[in-house]
Length: 500
Image 1 (cartoon, rainbow, N blue to C red):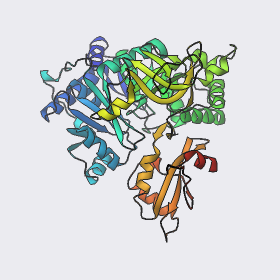
Image 2: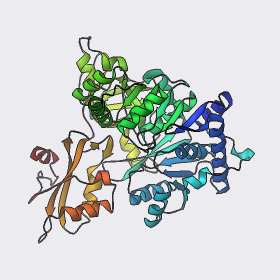
Image 3: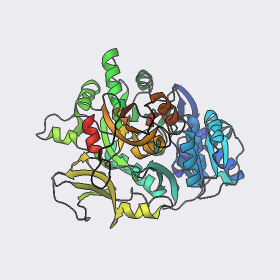
Image 4: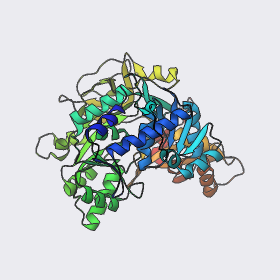
């Protein structure tokens, strides 16, 4: 089944229900939403887009995002959402690797992609969404459950992004688990898209379409605490997905400006470590609106959930241990802890978190070697280390070895290191994450200079900004005469972290 069938059904059942808002203004009802999507699908087909073709989306959050996303699905295509914060050169790599037949982008990014020499046709989303012609061939295309729906590019420890193959079945499984384990949804609810649509926020739009809820795009096109409070008050019964750093900022602004979160019904948080002090403070200010989920691109939003009851519980004997956990397995998956040999471990023993079920990916796009390394006897190896207690609560004690999570966004050190090593001043480098009070972590680069050169931070900054996204740029540079290494020549990042 094509996941976009849910939109076709909702348009029939609730044609006059307000669907998409730009700030406080209603853009379309569900009937018009579906008509706009059919027009996009018709235009895509006239451009030669066929079932199974990849259509890349490189744009900020905006109502047009949903028209393009569902239009591609109506045409039977696979969407390739690209983080709008990425550099055009990074987006180009994803476009080429996915072999996208077409890239739909916001106007400013069209120019950047052309300058970056991205392959294929690049079209302004505004132009695409102004199409009005609809023929009978623009009805929602049939897709089998295991057909691809979404290629989610997530960086790996090798430094090269990998395309996670997400099927229609996976999206249905994830959405059903949301209703079963995370939260309820009704027509009176409003989903506020303050986090990138290319990631968690976008993955949750389908269940809100299924239930006929409202979809709200902040006028700022991003996350502004005061704007979120205003939208929540106006719409009421508001839901949003947020990184832990966003939750902390909401709490800080609420305390300084006397906000109480009126209208916020649910905030689902994930994407990085939530410190105990931060969630305790947030719950004190906003009450029982928080739900934590644990997932990754390879099992989108779908591994475990810590319910709102567990988050606000202060009476149970083990409430602190539960609050520090990431909750219990979601309904559509099995979760275990395994040793290095792939054998399941007992309660409270520490090993690698592994998961299997309908929400787990089929593999990496055209990367059989990486796929084979990620699965063991049908279990997805998450790369996260933790344990499971007698009640089924999963606790993470460490995450993928070198991953940096800043503001809820994954940053892989090798990507930054490879760019820095392209600069003539840099002989050796190693990048680690350092604790940051607002962003969770910040990027720090240890630098060994080439002979005869001095540390020029401005030059290194400019070089990084020419090649990678701004948020990946090191916030600090530390010059060393040599990097600490073991007997095999491997850099000891643990020693670098001690220096910080």
